[in-house]
Amino acid sequence: MKIVMLGAPGAGKGTQAKMIAEKYQIPHISTGDIFRSNIKNGTELGKKAKEYMDQGLLVPDELTVDLVTDRLGQDDCRKGYILDGFPRTIPQAEALAGALAKRGEKLDYAIDVDVPDENIVKRMSGRRACTGCGATYHVVHNPSKKGDLCEVCGEPLVLRDDDKPETVQKRLTVYHDQTQPLIDYYKGQGILKTVDGTQPMDAVFTAITRILEV
Ligand code: ADP
Ligand code: ADP
Ligand code: ZN
Image (tube, rainbow, N blue to C red):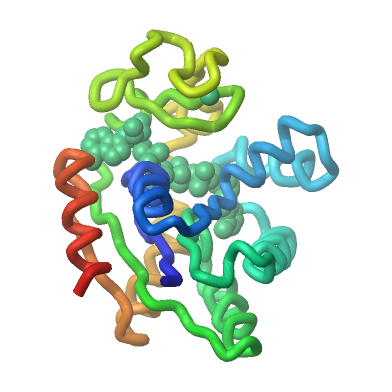
C-alpha cells in the first residue's frame, strides 16, 4: 500500500501517518523529520534546509526529491509506505510519479486531511515536539504523560521554531500557493480521498482506515 498524506501544516498528517504505519506495518517517511534530523546532526543538507525552514519556506525541490526517491528504493519500502510531507509541489509529485513508473509502480491513495486555516493557527501553538526522537504532542489534545518530557525517550519537549504564529502564517500561505494544487492533481488521477481533520484524532483515524479497507 503506497499512500501520500496531504494537508496544511498542522492538519494532523504526522499524527495519522504514525498510526497508519503501525497498523499496516509500513514505513512512515516524513521529509520534515528527515530534515530535522539532518539539522540536529549538523549535516550540509541540514544547514541548507534550515535556512528555508526557519523562514516558513519550502526547501528547494533539488534538495528534496532525490532524498525521497532514494529512500523509496530501500528494501523496507517494497510492501509500501506512507509519505508524510512529500510531495509538497507539483514538480515533486511529477518526479515521484516518474520514479515509481520506472519501477512499474504507482500510488494507491492520496489522503487529504482537511482542516480550515482558523483551526490550524490554534493547533500549532499547542504542538510540542520531542528534541530527542521527534515524537509530537499537543498541550490540550494529546499531552505527554510525563509533562514537559517525552513519553517515549524522556527528552525535553519544545515549541518548534517554525511553529511560532508569524511563521505558521507564512507556512499557510506557502501551503495554499504551492501544495494545495496537489489536491486537484491527485483528484485528476482518481486516487484522492478527503477526511475531515477537525474531528478528534481517533475519529480521523477511523475514517482513514475505512478508506484503506474497502
Ligand atoms: P508540518 O508537519 O507542520 O507540515 P513538516 O515537518 O512536514 O511540517 O515540514 C517542516 C518544514 O520542512 C516545512 O515547512 C518545509 O520548510 C520543510 N519541508 C518538509 N517537507 C518538504 C518538502 N517535501 N519539500 C520542501 N520542503 C519541505
Ligand atoms: P502535521 O504533521 O500535519 O503538521 P501533526 O500531526 O503534527 O500535523 O499535528 C499538529 C498538532 O495538532 C499536534 O500538536 C497534534 O498533537 C495535534 N493534532 C493532530 N491531530 C489532531 C486532531 N484530530 N485534533 C486535535 N489536535 C490534533
Ligand atoms: Zn522523544
